[in-house]
Image (cartoon, rainbow over all chains, first blue to last red; front, side, top):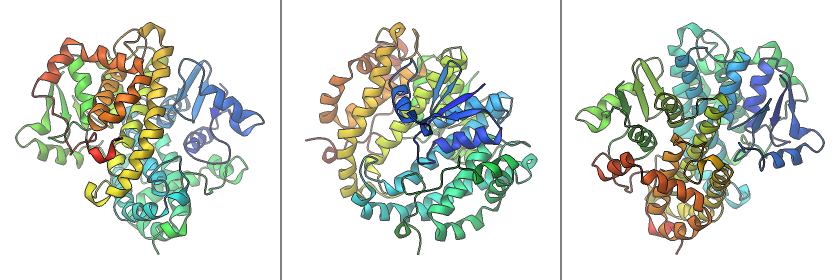
Length: 238
Length: 238
């Protein structure tokens, strides 16, 4: 099966969680909107078909057209062997993925607390207030939660979040750590010390040959100030 | 099967989407945290077991402990006959439910744009700015999306969002309309005119005998200013 991913060109964004799963599994896929005429195709896809998405990313898999990042990963987890096979295991991995999605919304809203359609420059004072609360309360809460989960998952041996095998939860958590380090280097230097197992999962994913090759390839879009993880020094701790 | 729902007492919140599905199906369930000593039980459940949730609601179903509202509804959709049986249909209903979850986050953040741990009173100017953007851009975008989906779903005949049968998407959309009417009566009076099919789904759910009985019972907690949908007149359109 050749999968078709539809997501904005130029940013990692939410598409990156899908890319990382596809890359980790060595799946065959096309990053449609990064090809000539692809962005137009993507916009058209949002308006057509019987299962249109509210926003990118969405995935075409044969006749299926699937939206919502965590939903795409629920589907791909089964097909690519990146999730447990039992009902309980699948639901648990999906639950963790959805919690990562919640975290991603909060990470985005740090620089866009008033409106996603407004410029950052038009909500800087509010962003500064939100960033302080985010770094003091929310990041420790989320990382602390994932740290507890990693610790409780004995079969994962500090490398996997769910059971004894790589899952889409690990690849997404890798991206969270990478992104937070990019956006908030000062704060993360301190915060990640309290989440050594989360960092362990990050490191295990980073060491996978396929992920290493991907990260070094032009397929990996660099972090930038158009995406979800933005490095605005004024929002980082000083 | 007797389900156990764990969610904060005193507010509808995210627990309400689970309650509505359980009630619509006539399922046997206990609203644990609303019983004496239940809140303590709920907090303990967040810290124990092999699949702890980041936050309520969570559901105990036999040996399973499932968190994340949309994930609970994915599970209950299958068990209670509130979702299509095909892979494509299940994923589609789940995708819509996750889009409703995204909408719920934005509805909440209107009164908490800076931090969920701070009081509304400490972020009133920011909330006012966010509310204006929310009512002008975000509500029309979300309602417009659900309206298009309802229109495209011919078998639903303006009563169901997915196929020709009631699903968890319908019960959740009912709650969205109820809540927006409560929180933003002035704005909704205008906005819902542009989404007649969404209102149609709302009305069809409201007319279900089990939902009618539930809404009139003490099991339904009234809307209030502790929950997600809050009526602050200064945030509504004037």
